[in-house]
Image (cartoon, rainbow, N blue to C red; front, side, top):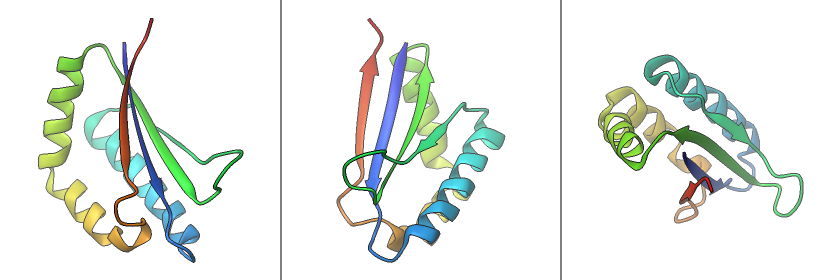
Length: 99
């Protein structure tokens, strides 16, 4: 099992925009790609962060889905519409393997 975790820092004053983005991107990924994606905010630490997690059966499945999502015009349009919501350079991706 592979778990993908993407985190990002929210720009000051953009918390409401970030929550809207969270709802929109989660809905798009669930509806269009049938992904079980979970959006989260931290309980401690910097409260102006958000995270998304999804799980895959293998790295190959993750890779194939990543290619599909990144090539999708609706996804790219949504990202472009909310680019000012996230601190530039703050998006961080991690892959975790179940043990």
